[in-house]
Length: 188
Image (cartoon, rainbow, N blue to C red; front, side, top):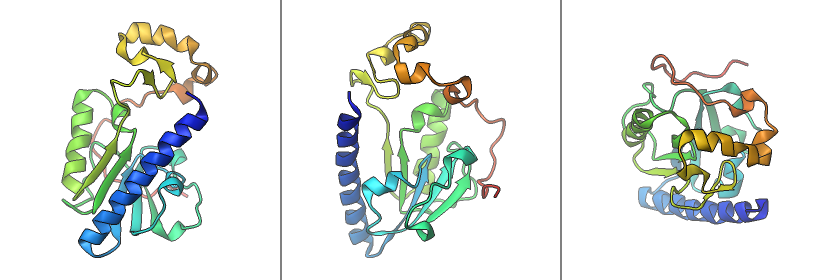
């Protein structure tokens, strides 16, 4: 898949999400609040900010926050763990949004914990994750790699040019956090 193809998929998905947000906003009779778990500000350039009052971004690392946009007043950046968001009340956001994050939080119990938090704090949800049945694995852009056992997948990664060029820190997998902690404002 080329970057142009991927961009085309993202544009189409962004348009679908924008229509969903407009419908939700119309149903509620106001602009909506969104929590975007694992999200970035520049992602919303593709979706647009129409019908959105505010977006709270939750990320596990400071380096994922703070990408400037023309609409800084709409965003709040917090550090937190998708699996445990105790500072947010039940149904405290009109829309829980997460784009390709759940497959990175750990094992099945970690994914269940993230899904439980999504159901708890969002009145509605948009959780996107790569389709298991799609033949191209989108992270590495290799055919069928995600259908093989872990040892074989690891050896196949040498064929993923952009992965091979990354250093160890860029390839890391986050270990589960030792305990549940409240989202915090990132240090300045």
